[in-house]
Length: 254
Ligand SMILES: C[S@@+](CC[C@H](N)C(=O)[O-])C[C@H]1O[C@@H](n2cnc3c(N)ncnc32)[C@H](O)[C@@H]1O
Image (cartoon, rainbow, N blue to C red; front, side, top):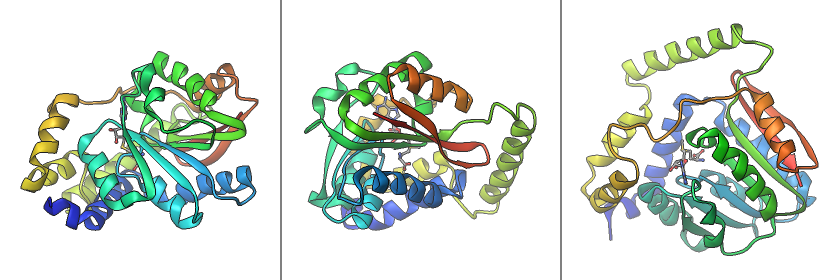
């Protein structure tokens, strides 16, 4: 058994801490997303799709809050998927698929989800692909089901002050990295590479995300772009579910 499997909870925790270095409000944002799921199902256990779910944090929080929920995690990172499998055990379906390929929907164990949730991930996709993905996601939801995308989404009304907010966040984060208070994304991955039990998974990952090349776009459209894309995808209601500084969660109801 790989050492990382025995230590899955610790790796899960360290991934969460690393993500919180970018987003201190991560748990608050996640709770707001789950409040929306609760409203969509009237408190019944949801059928959840955790899109670009990484280590499966959203699924873990969902299963804790709604015992009896069914969860499906989709991602393409072999290391993060292995950690998701290890920490979710048999409680979720864990699916490897590339969201840039429209055939990703064929890899799902079922359709008719109550909720599709995604966080800190859609900025990895180019704009035209994200527009198409919103339509594909709508097609996976039951009528009345919800899609929530939480990501960095600047407020259109604050073109210069919003930039100032972001710059200050970057400065404070860099100070925490310099002081060793938290790991950055790249430092976390360097740390993973020090554990030999990840070696095969890392080799697989390097083929998908070649080292030295950023896996994501630097394109971070304002929230109005997302709301318009959701409307164009055919969601009947769209709006802002949550905002914390430059980060926000948009919701579309099928
Ligand atoms: C910053 S992580 C966030 C993970 C998780 N949503 C969370 O909040 O903890 C971004 C995730 O998006 C995934 N991702 C990016 N592009 C993808 C693609 N084309 N197909 C599948 N997953 C993708 C990455 O592999 C990574 O796990």
